[in-house]
Length: 167
Image (cartoon, rainbow, N blue to C red; front, side, top):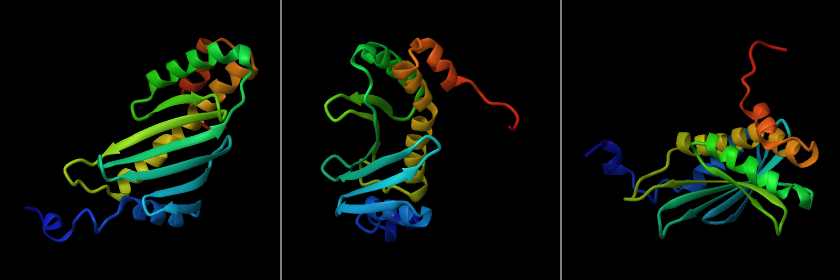
């Protein structure tokens, strides 16, 4: 038995408390919606992303949802769904979906903490970082498909191209 197992219990380190500490440290706007949920705004290069993290004790899962508004033209929805599939093929952590009713692009990620595992601040920071990085990475591709009338394959080249050097 490790020292942490002797003295730290899952109740001692609530994942939403850790998220709140990270938000405070990074000076992100946040609102503690409930004991088990927090919403915050994270500024990216392309836009501000809305992130919600919720702790579900019944299945021991920390869920993250990162959203941004998107109102694509109806006739471009098939291409948007095609580029979403291509983007999801590139994402190892989490996945994108488009919620048509509220007109939101959504990136979802879940951290399973079954067996009374404890989420560390590094794990939670990694979740948030993955969400914002992927949203930033694929945002231009979504825009090019919806409003630039680019083919999904061409739009994805922007997201997967590596930049070399400095501007």
